[in-house]
Image 1 (cartoon, helix red, strand yellow):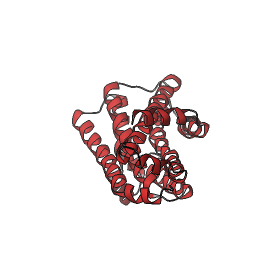
Image 2 (cartoon, rainbow, N blue to C red; image 1 turned 120 degrees about the vertical axis):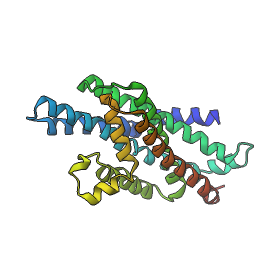
Image 3 (cartoon, helix red, strand yellow; image 1 turned 135 degrees about the vertical axis):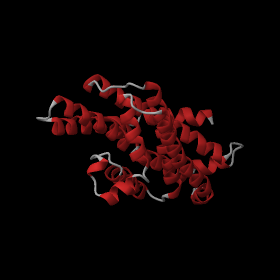
Image 4 (tube, rainbow, N blue to C red; image 1 turned 90 degrees about the horizontal axis):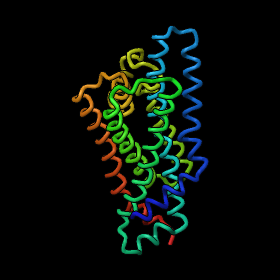
Length: 248
């Protein structure tokens, strides 16, 4: 399993497409939207906008790792890698777990770099670094858990891309990553409370300002953990069918 983790991390770090989705594009979006929404605004208002945009776009773009995860699993399935692994003493589930850990490492690196970018360029506050680290771990677990499920369920890359965009962009709109939740219609405010993006965004903002309470951290962590576990369980249940589709 260790070999799988190392191989996947090395392979993905050399992938320029992944670099674009995880770092270049979110930085471009962050700079662009901060420039637009802070133009002409007072300093206090500008700081609040920046405080919303940096974690908001970080959360939105971590979901795009699902595209890479889907592509990797489909390639392994089509070239016979999955079948060969299944014929070795290595359990198929350890293979699944090994690939999952590798993507958790990548997403964690993405979150850290994007927050450091916000700190260096926009001087965002990081008043509760331990809480922010804990939230980042659970966010990473949640996103990659859902990505794991998507990767073994979809049958084509195009389907994976389409569903990723729905999850990432739809969740961003409904979860309050693009606009304050209190400015949304009442029905959308209710819907947002069922989405992990909403809880993660609120918790990150509060932790950045030093206002996150321990009970709120626990609540958000459990919600993100629940979504991640649901994704992992779905992946385990669907993996036998994924294995049947693998070429030998």
